[in-house]
Image (cartoon, rainbow, N blue to C red; front, side, top):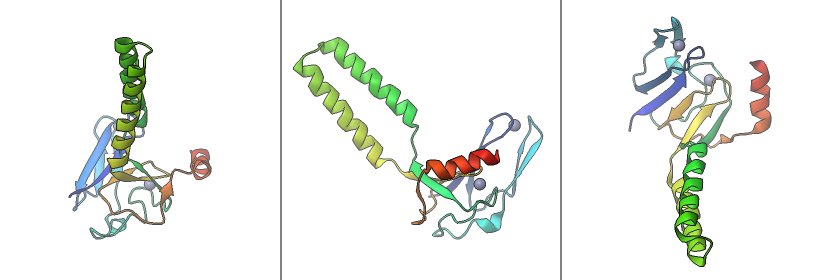
Length: 148
Ligand SMILES: [Zn+2]
Ligand SMILES: [Zn+2]
């Protein structure tokens, strides 16, 4: 499986999806005339987990499911609402809600994990997970937020 590096232009939000190796050493946003260099040495062999961010040199990362949690929540609420509209407040709707909750949990469980850089929010897909990396930590996230 190819490894993917995914990030967004800081000015216009245009997405860059780089697949490799080899990864391009520079990405350019045509619209904003901004360069996004990538340090190829920071990307190791295929079995090397992410240690240093090839974009910002950051060494702190977090891991999360490759899934837009907000979107999932909206779908779950809509599904629950339609169950309620079809069955009303009966035991059937209760069963329906339980099924939706179970599906949501299963879906969430089977989704692949991705690594994200705290500092520049670059997403690393298909890279081996670094056992040192944890789920998002609000305190670490806050320190980077202050850096701007
Ligand atoms: Zn741009
Ligand atoms: Zn970074």
